[in-house]
Length: 69
Image (cartoon, rainbow, N blue to C red):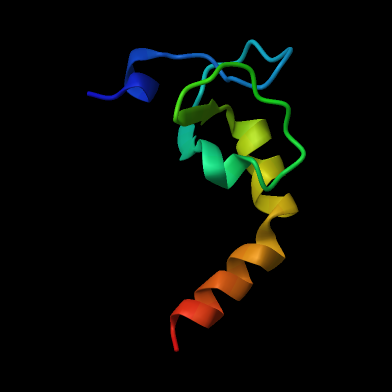
């Protein structure tokens, strides 16, 4: 049972929603999200995860194309 299942809150500054996903700090540093805390994992609610996906879409596609060679 992970932290998301236990009901940890979203780590974006000013957000009080319950987290649905966790990402590494490195992954979220590529977006414009202001994350509070200094842990290795960042917990995001549905809305902020969706925002992260939109902001990093092209970069993630490039990584997949480059790594599949």
